[in-house]
Image (cartoon, rainbow, N blue to C red; front, top):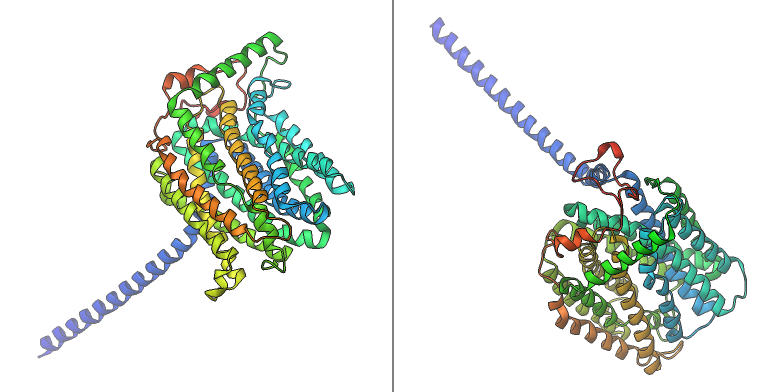
Amino acid sequence: MASLEKEGLVEESRSSISQESACISNLGNLDSAEASKSSNIFSVFLEPIQWIQMLSSQLNPTFIIGIVLVYGLNLGFSGSFFKVVTDYYWKDVQKVQPSVVQLYIGLYYIPWIMKPVWGLLTDVFPIRGYRRRPYFVLAGVLGGVSALMVALIGNLPAALALSCFIGIAAGMAIADVTIDACIATNSIEVRSLAPDMQSLCGFCSSAGALIGYSTSGFFVHHLGAQGALILMAIPPVFITVLGFVIYEMRSPCLHPEKQKKMGTLGVAVKGMYQTIKFPQVWKPSLYMYLSLALSISTHEGQFYWYTDPKAGPGFSQESVGAIYAIGAMASMVGVLIYHKTLKDIPFRNLLFFAQLLYGASGMLDLIFILRWNLVLGIPDYFFVITEECISRIISRIRWIPMIVLSTRLCPLGIEGTFFALLMCIDSLGSLTSKWGGGMVLHVFHVTRTDFTNLWLVILIRNILRIATLGLIFLVPKADPSDALIPQDILMTHSTVTSDDEGLELVPKNDRSPELLLNL
């Protein structure tokens, strides 16, 4: 009897122990699930930092800082702030017609069309042994002085104000060419990081644009369009500082002979000519030009209509800045979508669907101009924000693969010059788009107060965007990681000698065959 009671007690104790173990196990599982959930949330914020650290370890940290300053501050913030403030400057201070403003804005692209010239200077003509640093300093000084002149001198003639704006654009273009030379070389040497570098550029420019658009309306409202331009002098200061801190190896040959320089220049020009003749180079370049040129710009006509309280919705300065700022956030979403899901898709497939969506999204502008959104019960502000977000996401997804494609077409040694040439082609397309749009606005009599035919101009623009799909055969079917030009062309046009290594993107002690990224 005693033994039976003892066995019962033993079984009961075993049962209680097993139940306690099960409870402890369940609690442990709950704790691990909660820890895993918190870890996933934390990793969302940690992943971008780890990504930047990875790029910094593969490349030089000062190069990453250069991308952040040039694309984030110089192009992102300055470009967006410049866009809004100059629109109000021409409208309220100079009181110019929208078609004429489109002509003026087209002239802003002249420094960008001259990018091959800036590229040749940085590739072939070092200053005191440096190929990149002096041109950052030049860009900063030129942009800063031009911004101060137009901001501080009152009652400027339109021609002089236009000259100052072109000077600001020239400062941006020179800094952009200089950092693009570094990006092009990195894209050739480390092909796997080419989409990542363009994603970083796109993210920085979108983040800078977010800040620029968010603040532009506020400063225009409180300082006026001319007074707000004083802020345009701040980014050039940082670009000037970048010229002193970016890591660059100084060439021992401080005073190269003039004959040697001209010979090097000749090699660079010959290399550009020979490379552009290849069908796998000129065909996608032609597509990039036509895709931009055929999408005529109607921005100024729409801007005047947006801010007109009688014919349009009459948005205030703060509202316009807020709309563009939300669009910049959407542009960042576009960068993330490309980086996470689209960067490995073949160029032709991605650009076809991106261009198709780009043309379709333009119909939202038509709905807004015709005021059909009010018929559907959708408020103006909500509708225009939705339209801006959709168009920005699609534009970014359409733009990044074209830039990645451009970096893959550059031969070593003249990569800065040749990439500048490709970007010059894009700038020429944008210039054609602006002037073509200005001509159409003028032909259809869209003025400061008459917007009767604005809907027809937008319809023509949308039809041209869709028609561009017929040119998609010019884009290669290759993946972003494929070699697009012959290896012998990639390597034989080098204008850089062993004594003139240029911008060293990896510290000298850390050299390896994969990470030796000299310009």
